[in-house]
Length: 153
Image (spheres, rainbow, N blue to C red):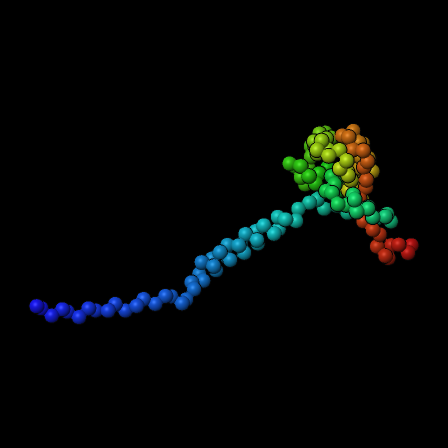
């Protein structure tokens, strides 16, 4: 009987005790690029220089829900803060239809006008009349509080 050849023992495989962090770094770099690109896009709106007035702040009930804000900029462009064309200038005559569509869901939604301090008064009044024709029960005006230096004069 031939002698059996000694069996070779396979060396035991040891588990890897290292963590490959390259995929994590790749993901972090992609996220960093996404945030760097989207951050400037998050701050949108129309720049207006609001008139200063001493007015009482609105009560919390009106501030809790998202109001409809119509902005009349210095050049007379009218924009809305909600809807499909948010923060883009509306063509003449489109304000009433856009506000009617927004008020159809909740007729008690607060409606405000932000008029630039240098815009013609008539353009702000036209916006307010259009809002009332669209069915807004009340229309408020948004102002900035006066500076402390201006308040002493």
